[in-house]
Length: 258
Image (cartoon, rainbow, N blue to C red; front, side):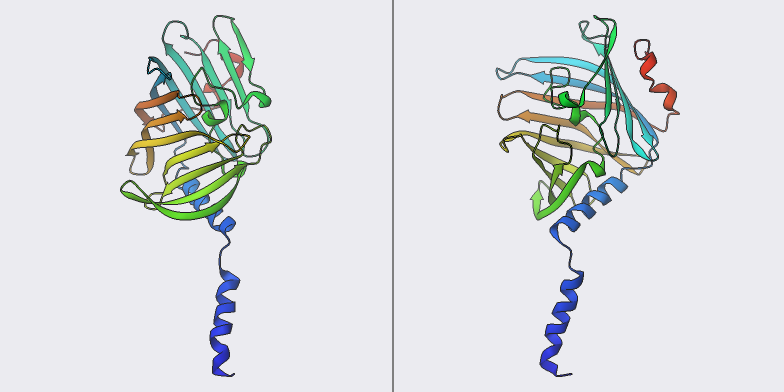
């Protein structure tokens, strides 16, 4: 072999195994998902603080429950305790890895359970800046991915990836996600609407690790750039592996759950 051919062959060999941006983006998302599995179930208390353009605030107090599913997306239940006008409201979500999610809302004033249709998943959740699709667990299979760049994010260095929803009913054309390279935790998500205009930014703050394994952001701030409104989620009282099961997430008893 002529020696001048060696660099060319090495280059060809390297390029054969080089990742595409799509492959790298997927692998980053896959690792982030892997690190957040295995907790089985969790409970927490949530303060949802709504702020309008003028800075006026209102607060809702919610109890949250989550149950992992072995071969599907998570089940979650949110129970509203305060204020009085929403007390007793319950939101149940069955996220699926593929296909449409199942979501139901119990409204005590109407004394009935309302199914959230897939065409309404982009609507606001209980008047907040979070959409119904934001409240569902973000399953890996629901997006296609592309790695964009590495970038500083606060004291961390982050991967920046683009994820594109596969669901045609999504309210977003794409999302940019900053994931820290140390622990693969989401630090920020920028959402683009159906016109591909910048719509919202979700910022994760004050991470804490539980059972030496699972990280949770104690604050999540969603800012709507088009309306000037925002919603702050403040989490507390996290507990893991509490013994929840499928019977704790029953649509037929949603009006009686406490």
